[in-house]
Image (cartoon, rainbow, N blue to C red; front, side, top):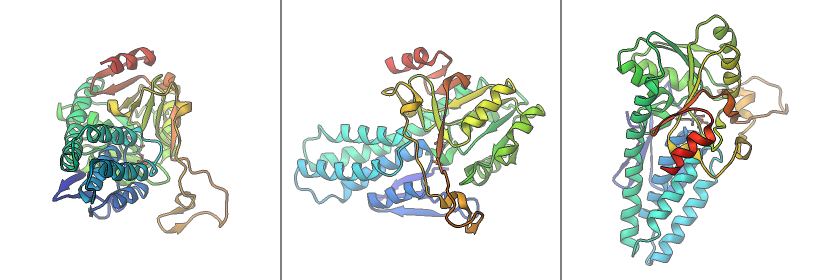
Length: 342
Ligand code: MRU
């Protein structure tokens, strides 16, 4: 399953707001359409947001009426500013913008700029799949046969171009013949766990049990969880991890029950420029996502709401970070620092 594709100078992707009820695709012919899809979470998950941003810039290049190199760079910068403004937390978005602009800058003319940008975006999509398979390969070594793994949110193929990061590890272990089971947190308020993770695992034939977020402590206390594995939206150079709201609670619970807590993410999710999680911008979304489930009102009008979309798990709660470079252990300043050197 590819969540996103470049075809005939358009971008086609799964509309994740409709799953699991409907498998519907959206076609975008300009970057504004991509920006809106990221904002409403039709496109979501850090690696996919990165690739979609690259494709958004490719659309901006293809649609540009520029006659000079200077003009096309200005068009690309305008599109980059719009895309940068969609969601603040997943660093993959900003990484993708930098990578595309770096490719565009040295091109000699308009035609070569368009070509280079489109090819780079396509290459990023292909790389994502290979990277996730590598993460899966490394991560599977941490998963014991017959274990039950708890995951939060959706870090599967849907959050990437294909295969997934945290679910990629689960999938790789399953493909190696390990008889594993998954417990999926529903992930309030937008239910990525209930809607997307269970849908993906069901398709793969991997046994999955859905729980509400507030059941995790009890389930762990009953000895029903052997390890936790989640994805990430941004990892600071000290190993602090920003991921979907509720991840921090799961990490605290894992520590209390002496259960390993693993994070799987590509290098593009590591922000080597920041020292700690305190510097990660945390998105706050519309209160209506909390006061309603679907179209049903569940709270009084005008009630005060916090709707933080992400939280930061301190590095001391993270047992290992898995990337395409291998498995990093604490102290992360040293182990992630080594990855940065490479
Ligand atoms: O708000 P979302 O659905 O984009 O949040 C997604 C997550 O938090 C994922 O766990 C993270 O992006 C890793 S995806 C491989």
